[in-house]
Image 1 (cartoon, one colour):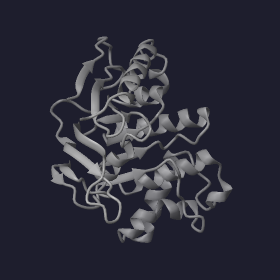
Image 2 (cartoon, one colour; image 1 turned 90 degrees about the horizontal axis):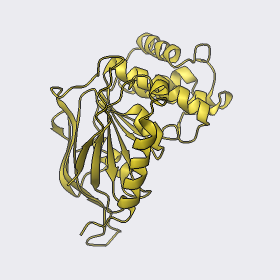
Image 3 (cartoon, helix red, strand yellow; image 1 turned 30 degrees about the horizontal axis):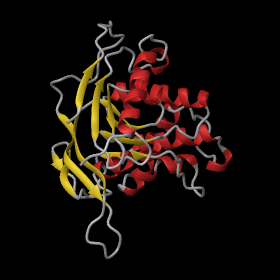
Image 4 (cartoon, helix red, strand yellow; image 1 turned 60 degrees about the vertical axis):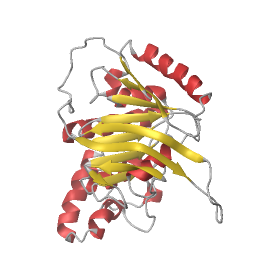
Length: 283
């Protein structure tokens, strides 16, 4: 059973919180487990087991845990790429049995198509949905502007830096207007300065549009800076061993949140929990 912990410092919020206790449940994992048996194998050890949590609409939640604990497996099940071996996953109250149209997935690699221009990469999901070309172009150009890529619509991925390509990937992710975003270490391959700029862009967009997001990162300060709550996982088979509510201002402005004196002690608490989680075994 997860332990919920509140860091109550009674801050004055810089802007209203996008999520409250009355918001509907957007993502729910109910006693979820996942095993990956080899071909011809009757059963196999579980990658995750007994995973339970809820995320409300407009909330940003980060999952942290030891390498190999099943964090990406959780995202894959939430987006419908995997089915649970036991338990159930729900998005917007509906059981997930396959790909979910209202969900978008962003990975640590940009995966842009090298033969398409940046604009046409951003338009890809809309094109698959059958949207008219003129409408796709308007949406893509608006998102490229918001992601600071004005003037690069006709460039190709090889002509852009790593940070610019990841911005294009973010624009592509947002183009289909998903209500739920799954983000699997999207900034891990970037330099520190570019990473913080993109964190700022993403945080502002999520806040302004009241999107729901489940975020995986190994960067503890990044998790604190971007999130409303943190879920800490144990070692394999992964389960949630603690839940921490990040009761700090500036969720829409991670650069400002990073300056708060509470960040250091909270990061230290997470390091302690990860040490405990690495020794945790589920029997």
